Image (cartoon, rainbow, N blue to C red; front, side):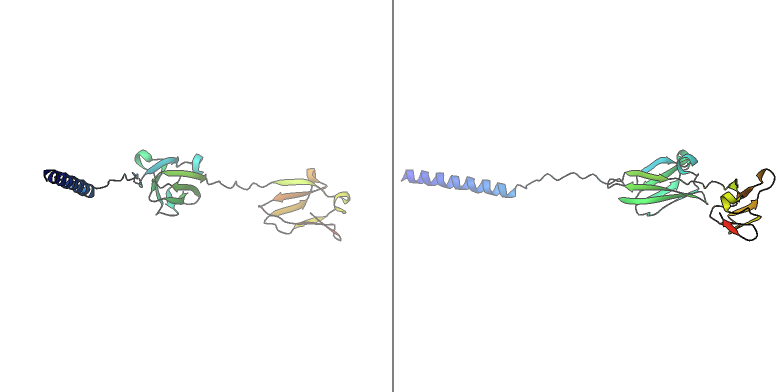
Length: 197
């Protein structure tokens, strides 16, 4: 009978140990490794674009963003004088327009998810060259060239081009003078017949 009591005590002891282990496991929290996410650094600035005629074709007095929810910009002052200061607001793309009050240049900007700024294509202002009047006297005023010898010539649009029958050093030629960019037709007449240039 003493043997049965000892066996029963061992069984009860094993049962108590199993219950303690089970209870301990139930109370131990499971800790999972969570990924580390870097926070976005919106508010980063970029001042690499020079505010000058070499870079922009003008020196800007104002700059605007096509989408200020993505990026803002300002004409630099103090340590940033002579630069365009670009500040990220959110991920996306926008176009900055730099103006001198009359002419514009544009800067394409991309803001990444981490707030970093990438400056893309810069489209500088390109001045239209001033129109310079020019004269051409290469058309001969003769029957071989025109089928007649003209005594008068008129322009279909004298705001574009004027013409005259040549005299002196230009005798025997049609003297054509440009006035502005465009196209026009010249009519040379001998008083009866016409030829066009």
